[in-house]
View 1: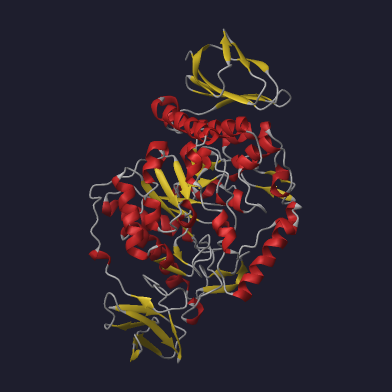
View 2: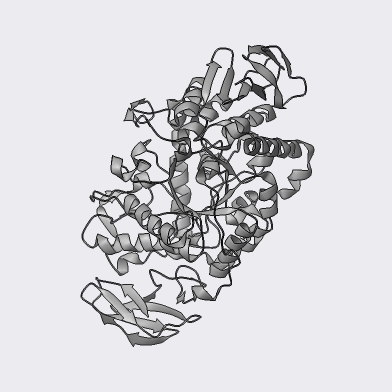
Length: 573
């Protein structure tokens, strides 16, 4: 049986490959029909307009404006029986974009790179959004058919093959989902019901109606979507995009409801499932237990770590980097997760955030680089284009040594030279609006509009595709070896394996440019200065890993070379 919620409609017809059939309505606004079978294309004619895609379309083979195609999830032959994802507390996440991870911009193209990720030593693959969006190329954050894996990537079966292949290699898989807004092109939900509200606004489009009249079924739409990805596509968890843009005044916030329903599926399936949120609020309520007034999510992103690290490495202080001063704030991020936590934010011109007392390290996901922090720069600059190889090694070491869940962005492990730019494939009028909007957005950072590549140009997309041939070049191979060594050390040292077991103790000198992080019987010593210096490290026993051969340890005195350098040493417990 096919059902569609359309309380706004006076009449509704099923368009089945051109044939139109009347549908019946119940008193809650649900219309039903028995005529749709797997493999057939269909749409809905609402009050004689359309046909429009099914709001819960499982596949859009002809794009966002075309008919939907029914599928049978049970027909796919999975091979991951008994699979169990590693605990989030031991996770190392690798974020990738399906379209640019390989030269073949498909789910199957990603499969060819999975052995590289296994050898690297990550545990979880996080896919940027894959729900159907307009055109063939894009970041995925303007999806409109939230139940349909993108047709250009390979559709439902292609995504299932990818998840199955990850599990076969011991890799868990997370999916980035966008529940705070929908894209502008192909967004037909308002034809069917009160999915959106004009009481709130988002920076990207209409706000979703999570707490107004008719919101019960809207909430059901998004919770069912989350459960579908976990149940029918075997994902091990979800990353909720920008939940600070979700306004919900209900007694039970949609994030809490969603996590409760995922917990029920977790208990039913016996599989470990997680829900991670991205939020700009620096609010520990997201991850606090429901019994303590929280939403009970498993973890949240902390952009403060990235911002403090970025300022320390580059000295850049424009835009939101104004809130950060360098090593002192990096030390605070390593110790507490948040930096801006209940005090004045010059960027926002108000007090922001809250001290995250009592949280575990595994409740924070941190990154030195991610899609936003690279792609939202005018030229999509990675750290590799902004700083030295010595400081890149420091960034990797601090990230993987900090007592949180680390996230790497595709190509970061070999200091990829390719940028990650913002790219779209909209129709001409919308493409012009997007292009102009990017120029206005970047004005806050003082960037020259002429430096911003056209997001609509196919060349912008092509420039963002990883160049895998770089791995064999000496400088890139050396950076890859450094990441592999750090990840191996993280796995093998009990002090580093779980952020919940060993907190960080930090010492630093802003003036001299050094930072020491101790976790258990292991210390990380970083020299951010562009000169040699001696740093005293108490109870040192020996060097475990060093970025430079000329590093030496004599008693408690560590001699660092003239270039930015980093060393991991063991010490007496």
